[in-house]
Length: 226
Ligand SMILES: Nc1ncnc2c1ncn2[C@@H]1O[C@H](COP(=O)(O)OP(=O)(O)O)[C@@H](O)[C@H]1O
Ligand SMILES: [Mg+2]
Image 1 (cartoon, rainbow, N blue to C red):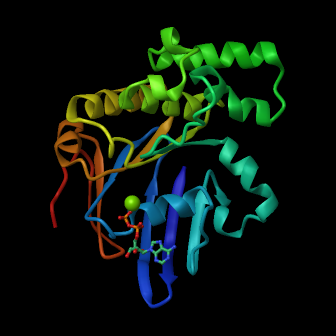
Image 2 (image 1 turned 90 degrees about the vertical axis):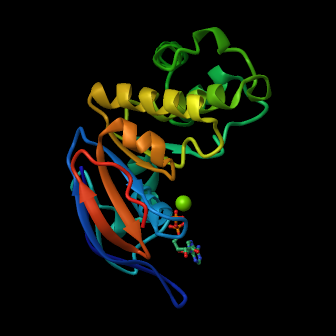
């Protein structure tokens, strides 16, 4: 599903990623951990093609996204769902409209949009908040809307960058469990997080980074402070 081959990313003088190689198989749920500045977000930005590597290759489903023409980026992103720390919901749109937004953007017909959005709302247990605006939702509920928007196109890969960074511990656990449920239905999930306690509880594969390098990669691991 994901393969990094000798990937280096340099910003000015700084090696944000230093000759990184790893792969993630289809169906895995993986945590990417490490201190602030380790390079976690850079890995994710290379995956959704927000950035290109300075050298090396980044494969998503056998496509080298580092060589993908700009015009193909939207097609790549349709096959992945992205979840952000700050939710990135449109404030003047309801939950339903926020989740429907990517479907409108690709010109899907209204009946199909309705069916898909209600399906996604059900997965995140927010059917009763379909018509609420973000400002009337709790942080956890907003992130569940963000998660519904990420899954609504049926992506094969979910990428989450500090999805619980703005949430309290109980709410964070709910979000991780929701992502685990989505993973159990077959979607590959990659989560960058600082949340040591949660990662320890989840017992999934943990890739630890420090200074642009991978320092450990453990199958059913826990967070290793470095
Ligand atoms: N656009 C950028 N320009 C310059 N430096 C950047 C940029 N993005 C990230 N960096 C630097 O790259 C390093 C890795 O950043 P990042 O991947 O965001 O780390 P993390 O997500 O693990 O906190 C940091 O030192 C950061 O300051
Ligand atoms: Mg980050």
